[in-house]
Length: 427
Image (cartoon, rainbow, N blue to C red; front, side, top):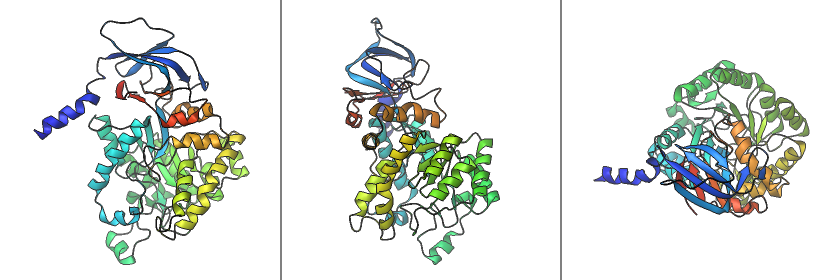
């Protein structure tokens, strides 16, 4: 009986795509290549992919037709920085000692569905040790969620941000053993290469490093450099052998500079990015993923006594407000920007708040939407399949009522969600 109920629950989102044809009539379509609206268009979806986009399509017998003529249709949104395996709470630090992997796994299923229903059909999960399993379950149609590119365990240095032994007693640390490359903790270029190969062994889709201290880690500094440049270069070179891109968590100026100079593909957060670093990023073509939402959220919560440990609060209060200012400078300077939020540091499903914060900092609404479509797809090296409503690409389509290029707050109210030709939400 329980198996039958499970199968019945899965049918609505696993049995629709194969052999199906759907026509979607849109009042406007967002042209992600040129960051503008095209006017009325009809989209023909066949077997999960976009077959054609035209000004009009004749009625076809037996073919489902979805009326979104009062809506703007956009490519499925892409969040380039999430953590689906966790979510903020005052209990988060203690839960690390109490919860089991299956507890986190069950929670992540709900986080994934909230993300999808918010219009984010693809995400890059940066640092979840168990996210490969969630990715596989979504790909197999077992649970509802976005397409996931999973980094697996972040690569850190000994004692650095993402060292899993930070903040615990010596006795407990000794019982758990010294963390090494298999645990994502390295000291020197040789161990750095080994850690990349371990992530390949575990089935990761990309590599993430923690190039500087972190705001929420149980340590004093949130911005000190934590890798030597030769260690980062070893990671980047090894990653290239496996077709991996490298994302670098980095707050402090020197840590950002080392990561960019060593060839990483993206800087995440970039809080204290200097003019010198901005010039280097433009020279190297390095992407910037700002995560303003996380900065604003941690600053708000740090003002609440007891939400974060006392060692974390000063970092959150200092770093949080700075990220939005840095983003504005980077945008004005012409740095390549891809949308990313750090969801998990704040509540999953609230990802679209980032659009409003980007616009507040000076980015036009159309460019902000482009950052979550074309730009993010290019960063993920998936532009051939994602990021625009174009024939041949996956039918990842979302819609909002009205014109989001005129009112960016509409991005918080996605009413239609299709991923790979399957409808998950309707107006």
